[in-house]
Length: 120
Image (cartoon, rainbow, N blue to C red; front, top):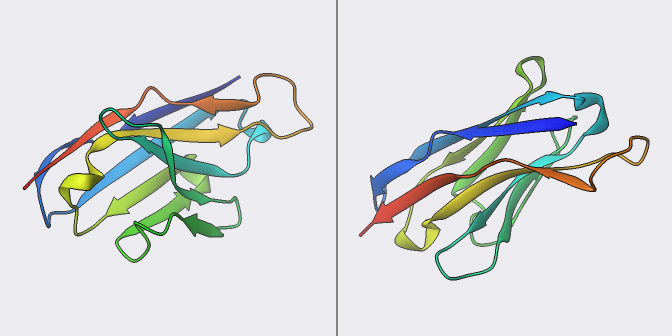
């Protein structure tokens, strides 16, 4: 099993910055790509960004240039640096890690989520 624990959410004003962290533990050999999803109020959960073990990143278009995902493998932690936050970024942010095919268990792992609220 893999555990993902997010931290760093909060209430900020439009234009502010915030950094989220996701610490992963347990059978971490069973995951490689780790990423962020978010669920705005009343909407479906959506992809935000991912980072591979080697540091390759991918972003949804709406956050490209404002958000930066990074990874510290020694600390088993990924980060999401969010700049120029807008009210539409308000959501519960979840950490996600698909299970590698060599391992058994759930298809993917999720954290409990951390709330980010951006006021206008």
